[in-house]
Image 1: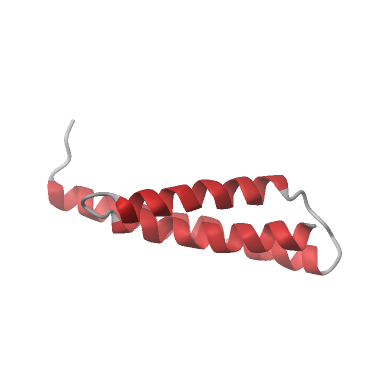
Image 2: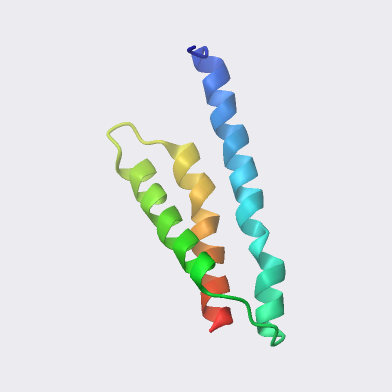
Length: 87
């Protein structure tokens, strides 16, 4: 089943918004880490690497895919912060 281009465009931006929310959810983990309640650094660094690769993919495609790049940028930032504060 193929979605009309208009619907696919909206789906991409809705997915961008929900991905942004998912990565912002690292904030409580970062706060816990800063307050001495350390969490595992493995998941955040894996997420940061994954998101970095998706950002590169979105930017360096022949036809840039901004929803993918934008959606994953917070994952790089918050994943790295969560990683380093968990150490």
